[in-house]
Each structure stands twice: as C-alpha cells, then as structure tokens.
Image 1: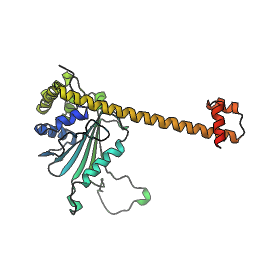
Image 2: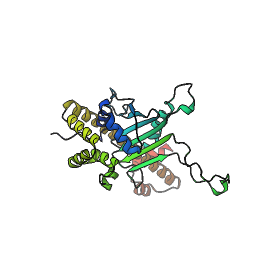
Image 3: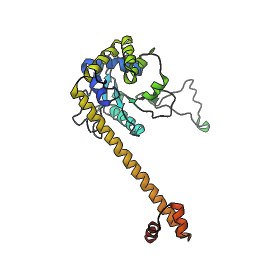
Image 4: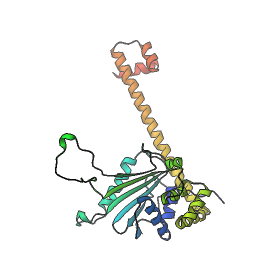
Length: 290
C-alpha cells in the first residue's frame, strides 16, 4: 500500500474529521483534549474551500458547536508561520463575537475555545498539551484591599480558552497509551504498529485509521494533499526569502550608518573598508549621500 496520508496535514485532517459520518470520532477526539463530556456536536464548516490549495487565503480549520453552547475552532498547523500569538486569539475572539446575532445581549455569547495542533514546537513550555485562559495576575502589594473574600476569582472570564498541542514534544515524551489523548495523538505521529495498537484500544480511532487507509488509496485525494503541501511550502519559502531580504537590508542600512559616523569622525577610508568590509567605491557612494 502507498504511504498513508498523514493527519498532520490540514487538508487530510479536515477531510477526515469534517465528514458527518465521523462525528462520533471527532466527539471522542475533542473529549480527550477538553476533558469534558460532549453530549452533542455540530460541524459548522464541513466543506473544503475551493481555494484550499492557496494557503494564503484558505484556512482549513474545523469549527464545531458542542452541547449547543460552546464554539470550538480546531486547526492543524503543519509549519510554523510565527504568528500563533496573534492568529489563535484572533479566531477565538471572532468566534466569540459571532456567536450572537445583532440585538442579542452579551449574556447569550457562547464560550469560544481554540485548539491548535502543531507539527512543530512553538512555546517555551515543558508540556505537549498547554491550556491558556485569561487568568488574573498577582496584585502588587500596595494595591491589595482587604475585602474579606476567603476565595478570590481566579479568571477574568470563563468564555475564552486556548489549547496548544505540540506534536514533537509528544513524541519526545513517548507516553504509553493509558490516556485517550495519548491514543489519539499516536494516530497523528505514530508508526503503523502504534496506530494499530491505538485502534485496538479505541474503536473510534480504529474507524479513523481505516478511513485514512482508504483515503490514502485515492489518487485524487493524494493529488489534493500534494497540491496543498506544495502551496504551503511555497508560501514558507516566500516568507523565508522576505525575512532574509529584510535582514540583509537592515544590515546594509546599519553598515551605512556606521560609515557615516566614521566619516564624521574623519576616519581613514582604508580603516572604514577594513571595519565594514565595503569597497572604496561603496564608501564614496555613501559619502556623496551626506
């Protein structure tokens, strides 16, 4: 059989978990992350956008509503775009704001949860599953007021919650399959043997494992996956190039400033050449800009 398409692909992830027939598996997967019982689940955006191949415009996230009162945005991120701290809160806040219609009171807002499954390490944290909420900081001593509260509020709001799962850290931890979340995550990064073992422990994982195997045999699905992967790689290359150009331009500007300062101090051209690595002609050009 051809190599199995990976769940670490955002395209494959949504094609699998966005299907109505896999709702029970999605429910089981989300329960393993959120550690809550989910009675019912509604997939809000099961379709694959027509422009999915263009990673700049197509976000292959999965938005679901849990128990009619919680909106969850699940995103599988293949490559580090260095914008997690801006991107995740943006979608989380957007889903929170859009959970009510115009004219409805704020009390009708649904809790918004963002789940980010990363195929790279991002945060300097010693855990593969990190949970963030709007928690109060400790007050400064001179701002403490004795109000008589034996227990203080710990969180500013319970309506925003973010989960970060960093798969490389999970692999490094190499946990046994004693927990449901470990069983599911081995389906993302495990060997064939580990995937089969996870499937034996969890019938929903076994079902998804079979779906992945079947999907991997489809030439159309494989082509779609390769197309999406190429688009993401092209974008990553473009970002890297732009970053490198920016650094080079910054370094060039810094050299110019050094040359100008040395010229003002009447330094010899030969000394400036040795210090900056610039040619005599380049230094003369900068001198003429003054």
